[in-house]
Image 1 (cartoon, helix red, strand yellow):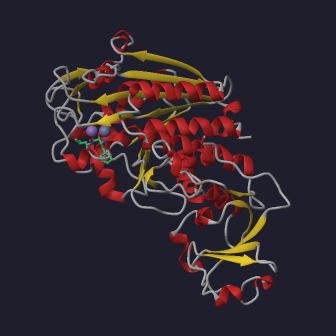
Image 2 (cartoon, helix red, strand yellow):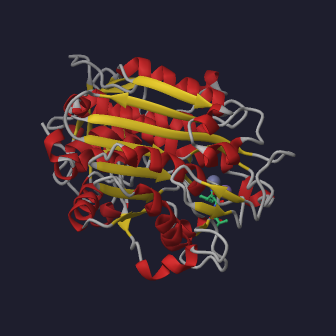
Image 3 (cartoon, protein in one colour):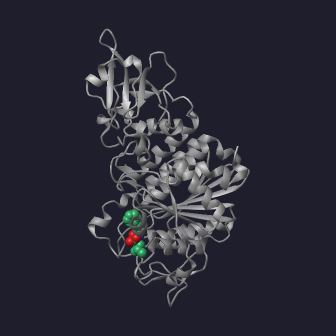
Length: 459
Ligand code: BES
Ligand code: MN
Ligand code: ZN
């Protein structure tokens, strides 16, 4: 499903978005009040014309004073009757946020419930919004959601590779994939170790797009299912682990956004996806194993459930070798990040204050919030075990998202700057434009921050 705005049409009916308490447009007459319309968020009041047909609608936005708690309120318009609608925005509602809300509100995960797919409600792009740029963001986000929502029986490493190949073809990217034992020849031993127990072979997917300008390398965690390995997760913790490829899904969504906005024409993008299933079999890697990474650093496996940092480490080391200007990892890496900041506000880590500041500001501006947390040098000793260079799961687990980020940083040296995002990739409860299920985090923030964090790539 490709999100889009309807072409301009004389037949489009107006939908006035209104804050609670604001006076309604004169043409409404007494009907809205008589029918009890009070502009609660998402409340719809259909307006009849003189002959009993449909003339337009009001859409409630709720209390203006608490609007900052909610994002993408215009997504509620998806509940309007089938037809083409022309949104009319009130003061204080950002056109771009509204436009994106309208498209995000149309997202359905229809793969296993095709018949229930409604659709048929379309919108003109609100005045003042950048239609092409918004469309690109929604298209990237829809891809990310579809990939996360598809369960592991249909989104194993083979299917994730197929999705990457399809996107490569769509945007004109090159793609190279290293699979199974070839990972050992290619010196990507930790990706192999984590993924070798599964039926579908582990692999590294390497996409490239653009041939001039600054280099941006994005590394996405692609654990198609995380059982925890021999350190098996309990049922409640395993339930959602189809989403453990959310970093890879978000990286692919970002690639689509960069391509569709034209940003890819001014930079060299590389997307590296270590893709595995963290599974259980006789060939599983074990607690206590010491792995030698691509970089040569040895890693003691103190928990097979801390698999993400192992596969990312080899991919980051590979990415850093060509010294990109900026390298970013996106990963559903730790439960600790959720304890710290909850599902909606992913922490990110970056040593460069200017880059971090630009990302924070862009993230808030485009409603793709991120919160900076520290790469606290004082905790480095926690990831240094007695018998190897690094420990993948420090005992005690305090500051678990921070120590995971410190672990990754050891492998990212060589990149000009490094950003790590510990995302959740999941919307736990229905919100406007965000049905319960897979959700991209960080991609739109990166896109919005590009002019500052990769200046030569800006238009
Ligand atoms: N994929 C999980 C992290 C995760 C869990 C993200 C729940 C979002 C929600 C990751 O592979 C993991 O299991 N991490 C462990 C690390 C620990 C063993 C050091 C964790 O966070 O418990
Ligand atoms: Mn795990
Ligand atoms: Zn995981």
